[in-house]
Length: 153
Image (cartoon, rainbow, N blue to C red):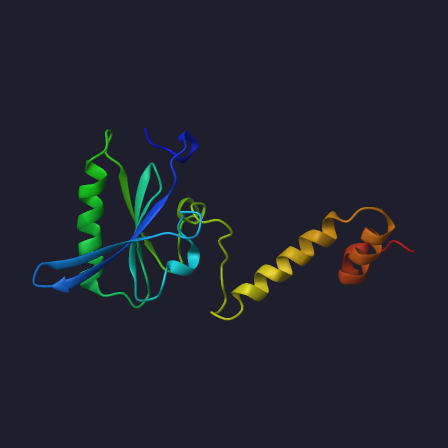
């Protein structure tokens, strides 16, 4: 069975139905050849090959024609493997963990503009929590006074 543990690198394609039997499929990849979360646009329908499962990701503004074409292509694609690959739908905003794990640094954005800010805050929190010695303790207690647990300094 194909799996990410066996060295499979996830792949992603965007699918467009152009009417009258015409279609367009574009391979999407980031600088390292892997798909990236920002490529999942609201108007897009994407196929994501996760090794054991093919996901049809549907953006909130995607057309029904694109979704139908992507589902048909994903089904044909999955049948080319032995055993046949599982097919799963994922709607924007309610992606399963199995899909999110295929993207490095997946963030759940509250809005378009605060995704980067959310990443920065999480990075800063992690750095503070890992700080050791007196400076780490001072920084942690200054940033999160409630976490002192009533300890007197």
